[in-house]
Amino acid sequence: MEKRIDKPEDNQNLFARISSLIEQARSKVVTTINEEMVLLYWNIGKTMREEIIKSERAEYGKQIVSSLSRELTQKYGRGYSPQNLWYMIQLYDEYPILQSLLGEFKGLSWTQIITLLPVKEKLKRQFYATLCQKERWSTRTLQDRLNSMLYERTALSKLPQETIKNQLDDLKEKDKMTPDLVLRDPYVLDFLELHDTYSEKDLEQAILNALEKFILEFGRDFYFVARQRRITIDKEDYYIDLLFYHRKLRCFVVIELKLGKFKAEYKGQMELYLRYLEKYEMDEGENPPIGIILCAEKSKEHVELMLLNEDRIKVAEYMTKLPPKELFEEKLHKAMINAQVKREE
Image 1 (cartoon, one colour):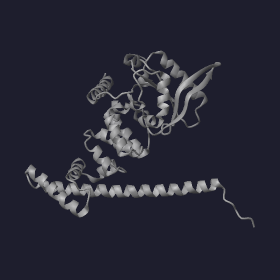
Image 2 (tube, rainbow, N blue to C red; image 1 turned 180 degrees about the horizontal axis):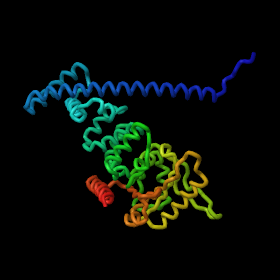
Image 3 (cartoon, rainbow, N blue to C red; image 1 turned 60 degrees about the vertical axis):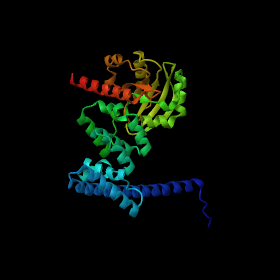
Image 4 (cartoon, rainbow, N blue to C red; image 1 turned 45 degrees about the vertical axis):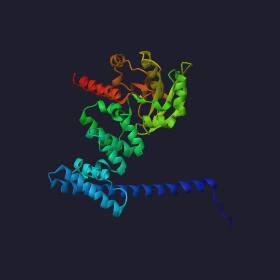
């Protein structure tokens, strides 16, 4: 009887399967620990708030938190600093109903939760909590997304509140992603470290050199397909700058890079690329491709007159340097107000 010799690929498959089991188990353990910790901290916050309410003196709250922090730290070690205890009280204040807390922050760590607590707008907080859980952001990535005002840059933020809530609920409960959640304007590409003068080729190369960071800015479900993808139409060659595929949207995403202002002819070029992909590259069950024209400046009236906001072609600005926070906030809030005014017209 011949002795069976395992093939290397058999070992690799076995390793992959067992690794998957280990990772799933670890993930469940971490999730359980996080949920128990959040539950404990909520109960601590509730107990402390009830005690503080008994006294009408504001100083009493500071005294009891400070005193309790010393005693808990002495007995249980780190994790019970005065600041952390105040976070627990704030957690209870924001979510007096436990189930709403567990529903919103399911799967998030304590550090991620306290990063989100200062976000006052509930829909904005829900957006970050949901994306953090779905895309498995680290706390550092979450903070970066907050700093770059990701929510205000999404197409979603320009929609009515009820629509925003419905889309976030669908993402959380049904894992349903929409273009409004994916598309952003402007895109912040400060990580490319480009100098003041550069060509479209330089921009494209810088993106490829920092592809992982570029995909993080666009969203984790983007998968790189090709650079300068050649397509031939009527014996004439055309080249798509960057071609991606979005797993959740189940469609190709064409990205064209432009240095200056948006020009009307860019729409025709993009339409040609999308029609070609739809005719020759789409598989059964996939959705029609979408296009993103990244420009240094958007030419808003052109975009509005050409009805691009209602099309599968989206025009967005990109920034290679993040402007001062106050100016950036003002610009994004103006865009949100303008979108609301247009909806009401």
